[in-house]
Length: 123
Image (cartoon, rainbow, N blue to C red; front, side, top):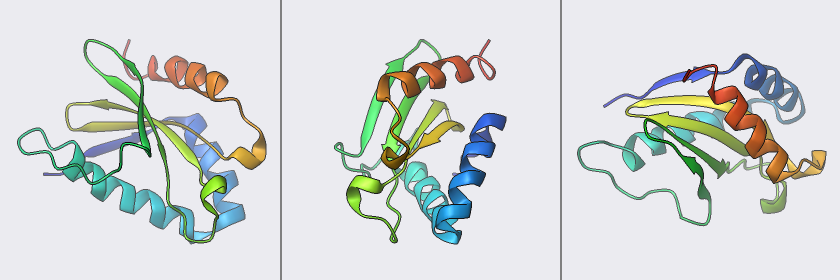
């Protein structure tokens, strides 16, 4: 099974800025995460491969769920790991926003931004 993946344009900009800082390691982390999601969210036989301490539900709507996850990036310490907010709808994943604690973001603000951006995909 393959997930279809889309990225919000604002996510693309945020990702680009972080990629400049962390190079190809961030690209690899996203690719690895997508492979894990194919197993974790398989509609027929899901397998928990992402620990519950790393994957969180932000909000559950009738047709989709917004979640956030801590990405594992080998060049960063655990407390520096980027968090990614994404929406899931069936076998489609939509990247909404990304942030690192070093940039002093607020989880509540990022949750709000993710919800706002999700409306661009689900309206």
